[in-house]
Amino acid sequence: MANLRRLVGRKSARSEAGLFVVQGRVLVEEAVAAGIDVREVYVREGDDAPACIRAVPYVLDARTFDSVNDTVSPQGVLAVCAVPHHGAPDCGPESWFVVAAGVSDPGNLGTIVRSAEAAGASGVFVVGDTVDEWAPKTVRASAGALFHVPVRRCASLGELRALGLRLYGTSSDTSATDMRATRFDGPVALVLGNEAHGLDDSAEVDEWVRIPHAGRAESLNVAMAASVLAMHVSWSRSRD
Image (cartoon, rainbow, N blue to C red; front, side):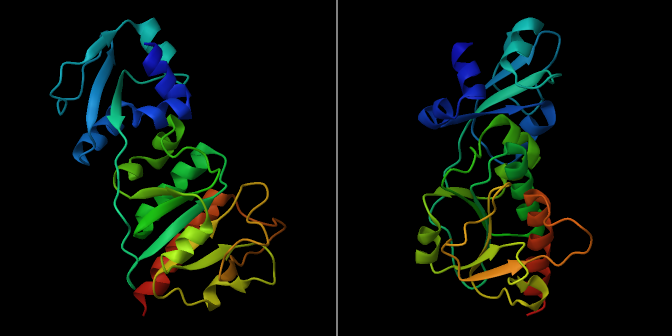
């Protein structure tokens, strides 16, 4: 149980083992359907493993099962899975990506990945000190999108520019270009920053864009902004 608890609670344990935890019957079934390598399955006593699981599950008493989960009312199934590895990205003219640079909340990161999948993005890049993409809360918030969208981690935005991507940094500053006046054609990446501070003014981006909005709010939540911008980029590219 100690190893399972570490995988749930510690990024370093997940990184060292190359494993992550999927919680809940629906997400476990989605992981299997997506071809994720499921290594172990645990069920709460009295619950059954999903029919798609061929391996014999480990049965835990309710107290033990609940103690290794990080949710208040955990569902009765969880799986330990291998982190998928993705090769070099295709950065051709039809490719576009969403980038999380310094996003600190796992729920926001999961939602960003979910929005990227919904918008048809080619993948997601996680940059610098962004929260762990394989944290249990991130996995849950992605609603299975993490199993279908290639998510890659890199050290800096400079690495993405070296791939030939044009980087569009998101900003609430009125000096940034209105997204409706921007052409997002070719190999591009939409870069979103930290929830509290956004992207630094010195960030290595090619152009700054903003979401036009009314009302008193200075900016949108980063996950909401990602949804709006990703859908707009998808629509804009479909018109070319």
